[in-house]
Length: 196
Image (cartoon, rainbow, N blue to C red; front, side, top):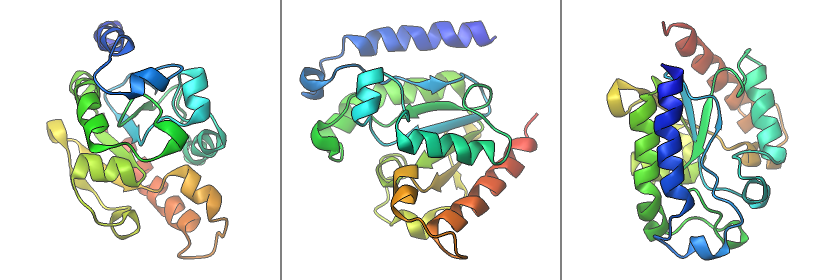
């Protein structure tokens, strides 16, 4: 089963490698297709690759990625065994600016294919860009983080803070972004443990 998923994802990645549907193809070092492990339980969708991701070709490899790994580890999850990670778009926007609507549209087929192949039961929308892209809302992430939304293929989706935002907000006091993230990751783990 897992082999079949990997074959299907590899076919989508192959198509993505030669993509020239938007101008980001001219400035990318690498496409950043995915990280973690293909599985039907848990997918995290980030915003867009940053500098380190573009260099390495993997999502969440800088300081934000290290914090993300610690957040997962705090509840016994890891990207190597439990989480499939991808982004809204697969190429780095210059200067790490937000992806433009036409860039998100150009990349949409790859993200939709990843979701359709894996049919994850839980999807984490990591950061404002992912939330706006997937939920189509302009509500701030602080207002909707930690809530469950209905997703594709009967999945549950939860917006969460991007780890780079947490790095800029160091307080752990009750009500702070880091404290809220701790509540969210425990809720996510509860939902994860209920999956068969």
